[in-house]
Length: 157
Image (cartoon, rainbow, N blue to C red):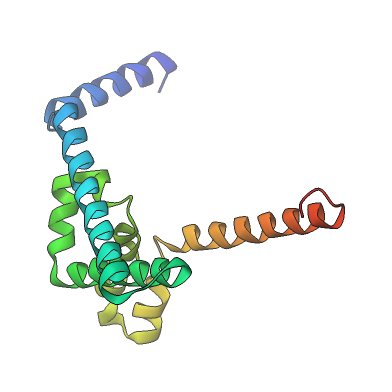
């Protein structure tokens, strides 16, 4: 196939794909992502408020318990199939908060649980979230090393 025929074929293919793909309303999609992500964060702030004034938690304990509750809610809603519907409606607005991370761990685990606990659940659980965890750990270790070295030279006290 010559270069000109190949280019013509690519143009025809792209025209075909654009004719059958649904058109998206970008403004509506952004609005949905914004308000759903905001509501998820608002729920997190409400949990934080209840833990501060109702239970009396502050500082690191407050942050840890709030994160655990939000991760539990994201995992629980994924297990019920609700978070998938939220994600379909909101797109990226449901992915960004901590509940989206919980969803990215639980979804593959649920999908592959029929293959068993080791080869299905344990092996596939981190297919989506695994790179995030790995790069997060590497980044935090590198940051810690930089701070340690700067502390040795007296730059950071």
